[in-house]
Image 1 (cartoon, rainbow, N blue to C red):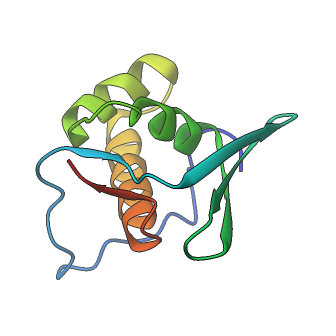
Image 2 (spheres, rainbow, N blue to C red; image 1 turned 120 degrees about the vertical axis):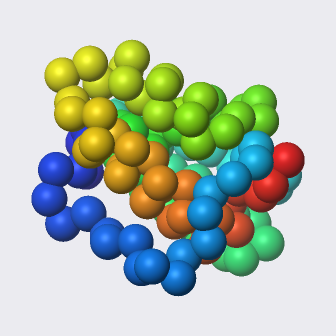
Length: 107
């Protein structure tokens, strides 16, 4: 995927916990850039995850602990033509996906 997802975005179930606090990358996850794709290799879980442009921006921002609000602000700067509601939804989905894959943790 490239850029924010405008369709096919995972709907957040009502029972998903709110994304509060700060998040950071989990140690032991390697990042590799190949052309325009960013790959995360989880040595502990033996998985490889491919990130789209927005997920790559979020991942790189998580080199330092950040809140969802800080990440939404960053994404709004990186993707200025994208509707704020789309950015908020995408950032939430990205964080939930990264958390579910144990690629990020609470800081």
